[in-house]
Amino acid sequence: LPDAEVFYVTEDDCKPGGVFWDDDSHEPYDPGFYWWACLPGHLPDSDPHGPFDSEQEAIDDARDRASC
Picture 1 (cartoon, one colour):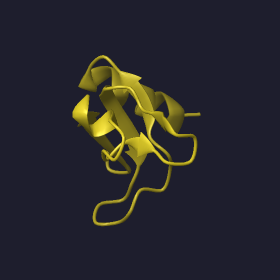
Picture 2 (cartoon, one colour):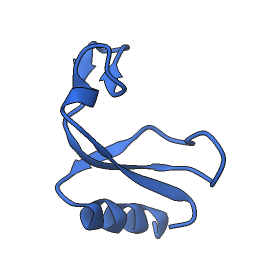
Picture 3 (cartoon, one colour):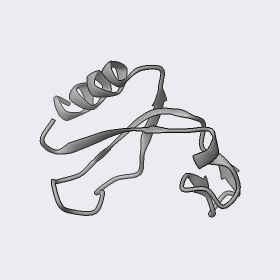
Picture 4 (cartoon, rainbow, N blue to C red):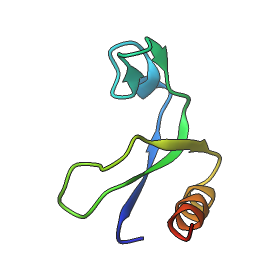
């Protein structure tokens, strides 16, 4: 996946003030695997997609969306 980054978000990341607390809606993301469009060395080009139960599910979803 050269144009996507897959990563795991922990429960702590989703708490208020955490890395994945959504300041716009004031709702936390859920823990799990996510992916976003991203070229190496650049900021993400999309919002995160997920959560997924496994890294492989996130990869499969990114590939499915890329082939559309």
